[in-house]
Image 1: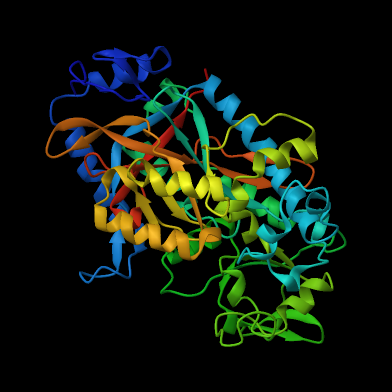
Image 2: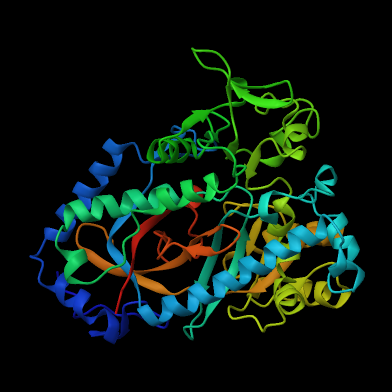
Length: 479
């Protein structure tokens, strides 16, 4: 494979400083790739995609009339993260998750951060993810966000930024594990030679986190993964994680409340459930508390949860911290709860409910990225630099009609990574990074690396799989 002529262009490239000049930490890996024979990388790419297809690594896109189940696109050229960068990211992520957890515990109890005027009350009360049935809750060890996926991006100057937090039911970890599995089978000697941190032990860390939520007197607590069912876009991941942890995968219809305890229906009769890793949105958890028309949840589940007879990961109500307006206040949360300066900065954010910010956004739509406060997957978003006058006019009307629901940010020139395109060409494509963080009460674990999503369309800044993006294996180097 020849990377001598690869041009990083006018962007920050994760592997190259300039044409033919690898970054010092990446040099050994680039040299390794350079020694591959012409056409060999393409053959490995095709073999990897076939392997992922056979493994059933898929996701669902309901808006695609060509069929909803898709094989997750994968690029064989890895994304590298230096040991120095990772140490910085790990510290920043631990700090951020600690503050967000304290915020969640506070906002559903004493609301000191609101009373002290750090976060406006109307922002909390108007957030769709703020659930009044969760007021007064005290989860085990007072941890709300047990599993978090935090989206990071890198700008043209190489600075890392937090793009958004995902504290409800973050997805994508199965792709991290399967990408690595395929890469290790394709290049079995590379990981030891190039000193790459392993990721394979995530399921054991996750299971340990979940078991830690059960009452200590239980010798063998029962853990289950609760899925909405086979038609959910992330069903593959639900079944994968249940299998990897050696626990049951259940749907709401498999569970029932009997005598104040949550029971799982089995062929041998009811079996008590102690911990639920729920991959179900809050609104569908319990039709008695939230959506009365939900057929996916378990009637009476919240009552059992309040009594401390079952644990939920993540705790209901964490969605308030996913709100993109609340996101803008995380740096202040870090200062308020931890008395520390933020290690990882937010992307500069304009809040459209503020008159001054809204005026600026409306006058500069062509250069900003505008996002709906509670949409995901690349939906409800305007990329100003790639929009038409008609699209900008439509978004302006939406902002004026409901300013609380929109934020705007400068267009971040996402960093790029060499990517195999076409039959043999290597070109730069934009990427982000979603590390996964487990909060276990007494410590916070950050899995090395995470999911690198790549915008496979030339020039695109949208990396979401539902919008045509793919993924890469993320190599965190040991030294």
